[in-house]
Image (cartoon, rainbow, N blue to C red; front, side):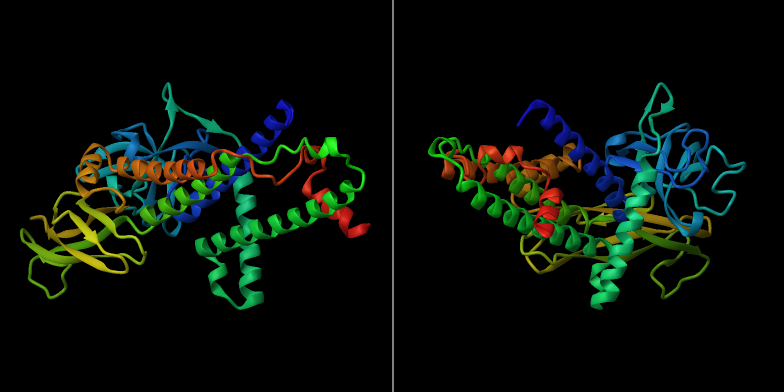
Amino acid sequence: MSLKRTLSVALQAAAVLVVVSLVVGQLLGQPVLLSYVETGSMQPTLAPGDGFVAIPAQLAGGIGPGDVVTFEAQEIQGGGLTTHRVVEEAERGYITRGDNNPFTDQDGGEPVVQDADVVAKALQIGGSVVVIPHLGTVAMGFQSALQSVQTWLAVTFGVRSFQGTQGLAYIIFGLSLVAYAVDWYLNAGSRDRDSRDRDSRDRSRDDGTSVLAILGALALVLVATATAAMVLPAGTQEYGVVSAEFESENPTVIERGTSQEIEYVVPNAGLVPVYAYVTPASPGVDVEPERLSVASRGEASTTVTLSAPDETGYYRLFVVEHRYLAVLPPGIVDELYGVHPWAPLVEINGLLGGGIVGVGLLLLRGEPARIRSRDSRERPPLYKRLLRELYR
């Protein structure tokens, strides 16, 4: 493959990955490196449809006035991901406001934003947000089209699982199978026609497909699956606690100055055992024990103690859960978790992905897979070959 062709393919793949990461980030409620704004509340910093680099909260470090953060809003436009600027630090969190808004979010009824609400911080250089113009416009158009397809499939086949993130996975998997089948059929037909004119010298020049590329693709699939199994079931759990003047049978209505114990259950629907770490994410919360081992298709529980402040009122208390596949000894996971909650995830993915590539190379010894001949590089794109087959 020529350098020009390689760069073209790389740029197209990068564009697809950018759009997919934006859409998936919106569906999961967790920006994946990039995010965007949909309204004009952050103008002139961010116009509707502008994108920005979203640093995950776990890696962003401290948050202070002047930072632009993406947080899980409770009241703004019915709740959901919102990107606004921190204008003040309060006793129990942050006061936020859109640059284009005349009043703070909290003046409009939004609760004080706590660390547990923040999912990402916008990258700033020299105090200015790094803006990617119109990136979100493309993602929103793609997402709208994708939702229309999901709705059509769900209505046509009467299967609700085609909607949401689960349906997205089904569609991507199905399209991959269809594309592979069509590509195989067209290549098979081309090979049959070419074989009549190809001499022995041409046949000797078959260069195949690199086993390393195939193993790399398999490793990426495994890593993506493992990451989803560890990240998606975990997250932040919120408890709405009322500090009251009286005792109550409701476990979240607690007499002021006292505490209440609540069971926190960690289920594991997968076949691989997991380690779960449940830790306090706000003042007034205690968890014991913080680390759990959850067997395959099983569950485990820990005790969360919620303490009501002396002042009566409504308070939001949080715990955060991280979980990891039990493919490393628990002592190693503990050490890595002590460094950073993402460290075990990186190590486990490296072990799984590297293991696939290493074992594959050991067994196959790096021999190329004889799938395509060198002249296939001159073939037109898939869609042109498909049209040629339809109309010939």
